Amino acid sequence: MINIVGQIMLYVNNQDEAVKFWTEKVGFNVISEQDNGQGMRWIEIAPTNGAETSIVLHNKELISKMQPELNLGTPSLLFFSNNFEELHNDLTNKNVTVGEIVNMPTGRVFNFADSENNYFAVMEKK
Image 1 (cartoon, one colour):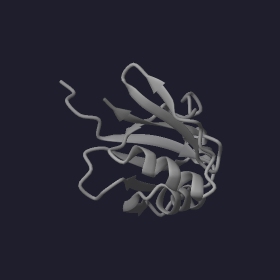
Image 2 (image 1 turned 90 degrees about the vertical axis):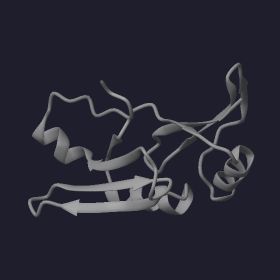
Image 3 (image 1 turned 135 degrees about the vertical axis):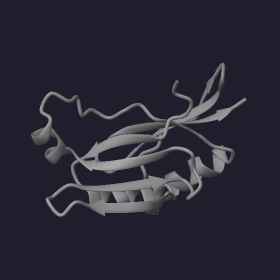
Image 4 (image 1 turned 30 degrees about the vertical axis):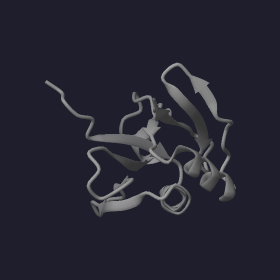
């Protein structure tokens, strides 16, 4: 049985730009970076080094050539935050495209976009 989400694969056009966005704007850390020497490079990022779930940034063009049948659209990622308003303000101050805070039955939520206009959501759980 599956009992945890280990990694989320995010397919991006520019891995270096994606790393810069996630580390400098959102505050994630690079956990590992690997290159097989044949053009396949993957970069693992996470909010903290001990996070149970991480994101792996893959080169969208390379993956589409290797497996053209894959849907490489952006996954829907929902992050939880204990410092919800502080995070919203921090992203806004860093000129990230950030949506308004919306009240939902399960808690407040807002979205933000990365440098490739992929949208992600953040929730403050009740």
